[in-house]
Length: 286
Image 1 (cartoon, rainbow, N blue to C red):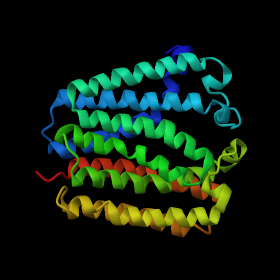
Image 2 (cartoon, rainbow, N blue to C red):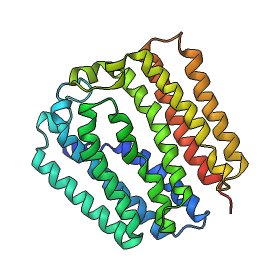
Image 3 (cartoon, rainbow, N blue to C red):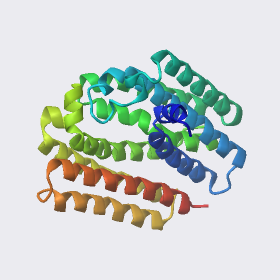
Image 4 (tube, rainbow, N blue to C red):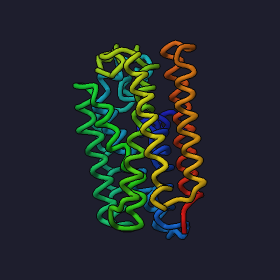
């Protein structure tokens, strides 16, 4: 892959795209009870992936001024000038149009509406909120929780309690995940002038919030089994994961500095997300 092509690829924030598609696939397979329509599954993943990628490109255009102030992001293509904002906007528009066309043709209108609402919420609402308030993290978690619900709705064509539960689980997972990032990237966020929680309320408050949200996750995630969408293996697995996440945070709280503690909690949050997605798909009740 040439350097210029790589720049366009990384502009889409592929890590975010792939992570969201894992949860979308889990939602789809849960709804289909492991009897999926392969064409619809592939089209849903491709369409939703392109819309998520478009949202990330739009976000990169809006954030290029902030990115120039942070050591981690100041070499991004829009900051260095390797890609112009106008070209990036065209790119994002094309990605979103192709993605929307795939969802409209192979899934249903509600899935398309959810995907577009997620794009608008991430780019416009979260893009503004994160500059203004510490509540930006919570606001950003809402569009970030759309993919598993959209995957479920791509099968059912309607919003069901299961879709709402998937949405809720991803909201409560994202909060400790992103607060942890804010802890170990606090220097960058402070340099950019972003009002993240540890900058405004301090690391100690942020750590308490992280632990509280993990407790919320531990209580909410098992509800998919409680309401009969998955089997008891999922229930046990999610309780163990949630309690392990909480135990890790509590036992390392006084042993690690703020940055290392945040990075440790962030890394474990990724394990939790992957395990959640796997358990959802492997423990479906037929």
